[in-house]
Image (cartoon, rainbow, N blue to C red; front, side):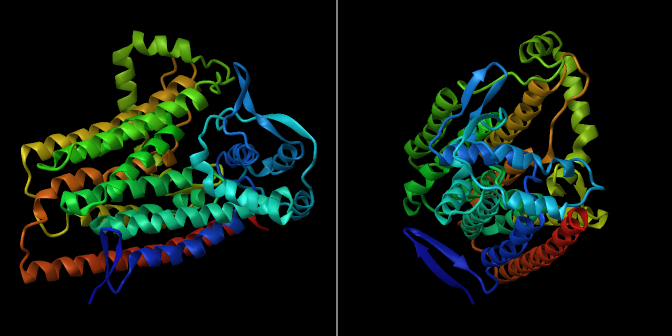
Length: 480
């Protein structure tokens, strides 16, 4: 038995096991665990993200650059020293939370005094990445709470916003839903969503953009709201504005040009919107704020010259980097929490890998795709865009975080690739676009139903495992 509900011209089918509601209940528990059990500013770069959000909340849409190596914003004076009082936990797994120090930090009030604070790695991020965090800061300000309480409120509001967007994406996702759920239930994903980081909203945005594009392959052109196509472009533009190496993904709506007889205007307009958002923010928000990272031996200009002078060496190094770091980066993406100093039990990584593989294969459930040459070309184009973003991440970190001429790459983290993994099903939707009018036999429908139910049951069990793993890992790591 199935029920349906309508959203404009869109009809969403809901089975007796509504996986998007299950995900929402999971996040209420797992997200709360991360909000409460993760000490202040113990998510990677959370302090710098929170300071950027405070700047936006106070009306500073763009960051401020003082010099070639200094950018940030004018913030209340006690914020930075209070946050630094938790630095003893970073990269030090043997340390637990000092309860006395935590209580003292809670009592520190906002101050009327302000000072310029540097946070060059987040000063150029757009306001669209901090909607939930800024709402939390405004709510904290309305309630008259202290800075540390505002952080926890911001974490909670950001987690709720990310969860709402993710639930909508999962409801639209169809065959992609179990895959989305596994990715978005990973401890790393939950930790990012329930923090002051911009990375959580990027995960939700990626899932929603993929689901919106997928809807366009499932239904006739006249049944899909053009607003959904344009929304996908806007979301992709916001993601690219937040992470410059992701810029190629603004072209993803162009895959809808494969639909014969459909209007070419809306896919082109969608990509144009995404590109426009990215370029506008690059001009007004990124370029005026970007700095040269003050790390010994690092020079973007000299490193670029080295790359151009040694293309074969670079290609060989990038290949070896991928081969040698594939497993560690996968484990980081699954969940190495805190400042990459809190590993999960080894069994969890094996279970997560199996669930990722099964949920990915589940998107190819039962039917054989009716593939034409055009589909292969467009699917290859999707993979090329995503690979271009992966290459852009690695190249950006080689240029800006690695010493000139080094034979290794510094600063690459597994969490950077999660938004791109969530966009991978766009290529799969292209392969199956010719199957929507195929009449399925009763036997095929029954097999497909059983597989779908099995995948949802697997996701449910994985979520339970993730809840207990988050609780045990965070409580043991941080609390006495």
